[in-house]
Each structure stands twice: as structure tokens, then as C-alpha cells.
Length: 287
Image 1 (cartoon, rainbow, N blue to C red):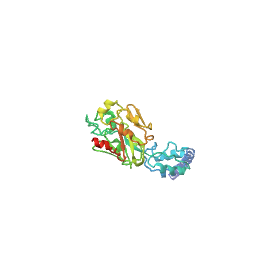
Image 2 (cartoon, helix red, strand yellow; image 1 turned 180 degrees about the vertical axis):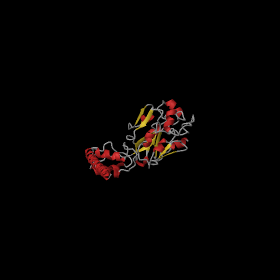
Image 3 (cartoon, rainbow, N blue to C red; image 1 turned 90 degrees about the vertical axis):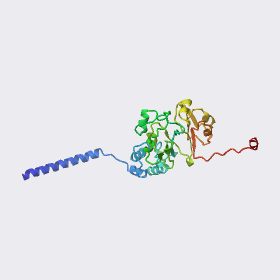
Image 4 (cartoon, one colour; image 1 turned 120 degrees about the horizontal axis):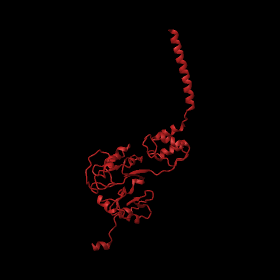
């Protein structure tokens, strides 16, 4: 009986030894070398794992930075220039200068401008509502007010305004990760160049219908009248699909387009009040 036990123990020991040797050589054969610089780069990244860089997470982005020959087309929107500079220093490369971006809502259709014509009583989700019908107003391009973008934001940079039914973006907290852009089924959120003092001029409309139907659906809809295009001296405005668009990289903030827009679909935010033209003596006498 004791001999049988001894043979069993020896057999199992030999089997374990042979298995260990086999596993050792298999591990050596299929060993994957990982560049230690990946860990160093990952440490300087913000660990937000938001996907704004275009990769699944900060680890994947760190691997891409290490493997890439240049940083062209690679950027961490959350960390910005400071983080990219640190990563470049670790890898002995040069980080390109990337203009900071901020999210803007391309819709200004609050109830006072875009009256409700129906009532949605379904799941509180923009994608579901978008797939079912045009919305609670006659504008099939406007915000559905279900808050998918707000729920997608991991930085508390957005909230729903109960009065307008539209999401509000907090510029100071927005890191331009693009999560809200992906969440909106109607592509109403755009990442635009961030200017000094958070100043913005853009067309807050996405209605591609012709002027008449667009204006009937929403009082502040763009009607593609081309007045803004004609007054712009910097070729910053184009019209496509019955909708004007202002290029944030070409715009010089002259603000002429905003005063020319007959429907006030061009928003100018965070600018000082316009100077009123003083009345001349002749005009005063006539009055």
C-alpha cells in the first residue's frame, strides 16, 4: 500500500516538473516585451479614460504615443498642452501645439422660439426618441431635450436648463473629450476652437430645411439668406445644405455677421456690450 502511494507521489511530481518545464519554454517563446516607457507616460496622463483621444483608455493612448514616430494627430484633450509636453519630454520628442477646444450646442430652439406641437411619452432617451419620431416640435433637427449628452459627460460640465429644455455647457469644466458629441443622435454638439475669455460666434442652428419651413418651425432658425456670407471679409462663413457655418479658425470676431442675421441664429457670447452710436446734433434737432 505504501509502495503504491510512493509511486503515485513520484509520478505526480515528475508530471508537475515536466509541465513546469514545458510552460517555461512556452512562456519564453511567446513572451511579449513591453516598453517600460509606457508606464512612465501613463503616469503623467490624467487617468480620465474618457476616450477623447480616440483610444479606449489612457493605457492604450500611452502605448500609441510610445509606438508613434511623431505626435502628429495624437492629443489628450483633458490634459492639454501641459500633459502632452510631459509625455513628449519622457519620449524625447516634440509635442505639436494644439488649439484647445470647447463644446457648443448648435441649437437655440427654446420654447419661446420653437413651440411644442406634440407630446412624447416614451423612454427618456434621445436616441430612442430620435428613432421614433421628429420630436415634440416641427423641427426635426433640433434638440430632443432628453439629456443624453449630460449623462455622457464625466466631468459635470453640462446640465439641462429646465426653462429652455436645452443643455448648458460650462466652459470652465469642459475638457473637450467629445463624449457629448458622440451621445447626441442629431449631431447638435460641436467641438470648436476655444478663444480668449471664452468668446464665441457660431450659428446655433442645425436645420437643413429651406428658409420658409425652417422659419415656421423655429423663429431663430438659419434661413440661408447669405447676408452673413456677404458681410464677412475673411471667408469664414460658408453655406451648405441651406445652413450657414462659421469656421472658428478663420473667424476674427468682427461680429458683423451677428448684426446682419435677420433671425438672430448667430450667437455671440461673452463679448462686451456693443457701443451705441451717438446721436448727431442734426438728428437731435429733427427729433
